[in-house]
Length: 162
Image (cartoon, rainbow, N blue to C red; front, top):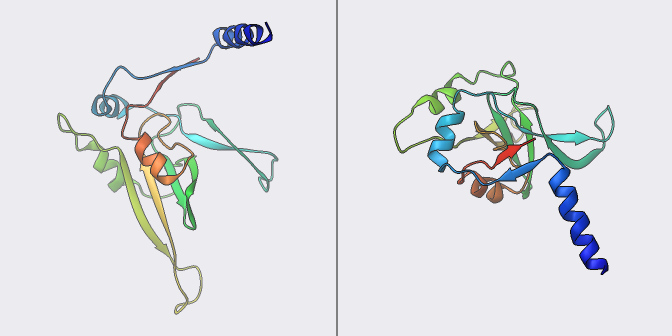
């Protein structure tokens, strides 16, 4: 009896939540082409406090205000990644955006990943390197491990309804 009640309550909660996710009816190329000119939602961290010194480990989808989303695998552990929406004023993204504008029937750019080096210390000391991937589809910067992020982007983005 208890398990039937739990199932009933779970079904009722899901039905009344007002939020649903379903697989897309499009293929990956169609999905990428349709989202090319739209503002997109990106995964962003949820901070536990205003200063942001303690990360909750949770993420939320932003409003559809971004042109690009960012995913950076942790350089010491590719099972972790850092995500955010891209502030287009933070850098010159002209060349990256141009890669997405090359549209051919049956082809779409899904991610542009860059390996970068930064020299924060004096010359002669090692540079710091990182990988940054930029994507242009709703929720494409999945906050999971690097290979999970890449595998997720092979598919059309799930359609989300509120």
